[in-house]
Length: 175
Ligand SMILES: CC(C)(COP(=O)(O)OP(=O)(O)OC[C@H]1O[C@@H](n2cnc3c(N)ncnc32)[C@H](O)[C@@H]1OP(=O)(O)O)[C@@H](O)C(=O)NCCC(=O)NCCS
Image (cartoon, rainbow, N blue to C red; front, side):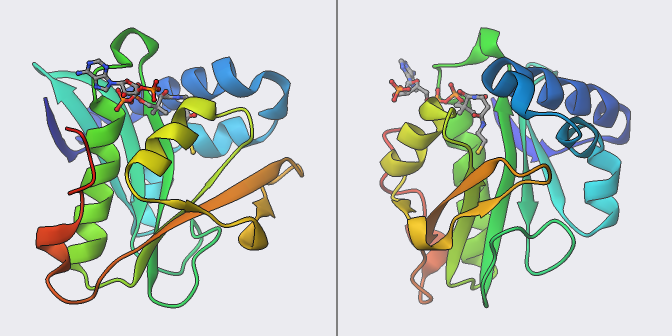
């Protein structure tokens, strides 16, 4: 399995996968957020990196890395990067794909000299919460927000050491 940037011909499929996986977890809470999740092209146009997990040429998951403040930054504070829209196809979950996608974001944030990687997640996303805690993120309730439509957004963040970050990120992972 490799984590790499999405290819143009994969963007629509990744958008559909993202909506489908979120729907399974959030059901009615999704509402108008589905259109935001579907539009991988808009994320790239706004300067985000859209990464996919590729297993033998098949896209089984994806994540959006937000490098700093901008239209896709929900919870970023000064000198942080943000992770968004992490999904893994249900058929491929439980094999470390999600872990690798989050580690790829940690690597990017570390290499860019960011002070931390932050993310927002919803209360029902319990598998994701375990993953984040395993990878050294901390729950930050004082920074919680809301998604468009008003549903709650729980904040998790991982502080990154500024010196030799790229060699240190991801070391807490079991993978
Ligand atoms: C959150 C999500 C991306 C995790 O993806 P994943 O590929 O299943 O993640 P991982 O495989 O790395 O970890 C999941 C579990 O598999 C286990 N695992 C990982 N590699 C494994 C392996 N080789 N063998 C056995 N188990 C393994 C992990 O220990 C973990 O166990 P736990 O959930 O009991 O703690 C996925 O569940 C998902 O798409 N959820 C819905 C969308 C969502 O909530 N996104 C978060 C947005 S903030």
